[in-house]
Length: 189
Image (cartoon, rainbow, N blue to C red):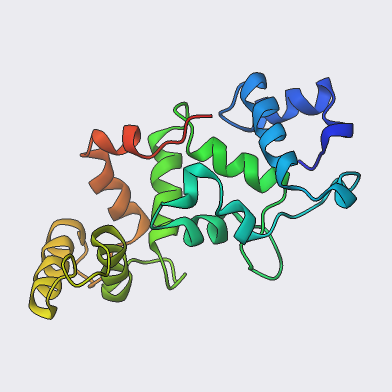
């Protein structure tokens, strides 16, 4: 992938449509939204990367507890700084689109929840996941015993091979039994 307004011709648009779960109209809308984030002096660069800080201001991400992880998972930057180019941005929107498959959604959700980037959801990942979902304020945070019990329950339900972690396959198995997952893991353009 790799295009900007001057290069978002019919051929490129068709290519993006073929490579994503987005329609041509959604891709054009995505481009307009992305282009608004690009500084005027950079408008002619086809490979411009929008800083994570600017991406996080999008209404769809602004209040999402996983917003930084989302940017880092979809960023192809060598610096791993969470910046997104247009291709990354389309990949992000495609994975969160209503048309994306359960397999795609669960794949990206797993990587978003894998805070340690080690290919498994261990106790520390699960603790961070719970903290993101419940908030870290005194009124919503769990006690150490409550956290331990919750993580034990998650592992008892999800850790099929009993190795103390949840791998992608186990995660996808659990998600396949949750019909609400697909409808909750979306962003509408």
